[in-house]
Length: 387
View 1 (cartoon, rainbow, N blue to C red):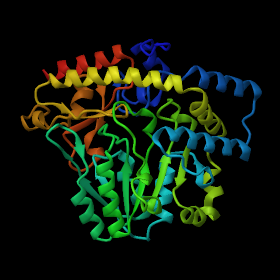
View 2: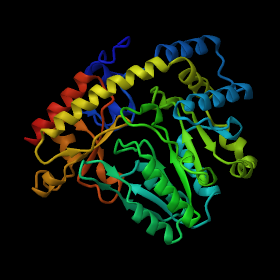
View 3: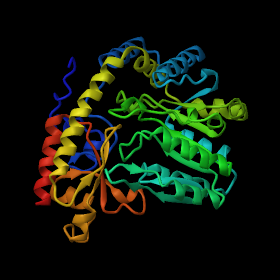
View 4: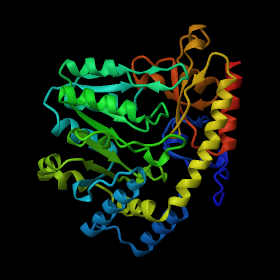
């Protein structure tokens, strides 16, 4: 590898003081979805040059247009080149979810969230006084998480109008198949509902593949809004830039009166950095995914040796969901959750499973995008704490 992703030590990460590493003092931070690998040379050089120029003013429209075109071109590797004329720059993907709920669903209509879910999916609809219908997913005999399509069908039958889809799927690590997505599309079409697709982890496909939801049928573009970003795949979440894709002209035209106000808060530096990611820094992303595959394999192998703990096969993202249900049923954690127990006894900070859905209090989310020696230390600590 041209890049040394193992170079940062545990002490260095703690001293750098990010939220991930300062929220739980003394603990290994594995709870925030960001990477501990720094950034690519191209991003570093761009940021230094931008600072030297002092060019932190408002974004010229031509710059924004170039980045939208670069986004579409980059997505071409998945046989999808959405129209840049129907794309909008936003500060973050979650701003797109808010747009979908507020402007493309009826007031008071419920939002369907397959779980386990990215945590904000279970809070943002409440900002708009919307009921959240959680639809717990199932693990098949090979351990893969699968959408409960019958459950989603039943939820939409109650009058819900929006399905939140995360693909690749945080926190399960799945890349959903064409058959699953096609079946979901048929259900959404039957009920006249819509899909908000969070595709932020597309640059982090490991062994699976990404199938854009808007491509699974002729009707899919008519009821799909997609959000994507370079921030996860190139480790720049603090630069605040995402792209919202309106997959049909009617939706695009309907949102035009509000487009400027929605887009204006997007960071100038974030937009330009996104262009660097998509046009100049693919080698770094390719190598970081190779490194993540190594970490993923280590994580899965270690967990396979822990009695009473499991993790589903990870096809994309740098996120996994540890299932401690069997140990919890044995009373291993007392009155604590697994995440609480491990913060206290292993000094490893994971995400509380209950934040991913009502059925997941005995789970914990782990971020494995960290130097392999740090990952190994964290797994050693967890293993020792579990006994």
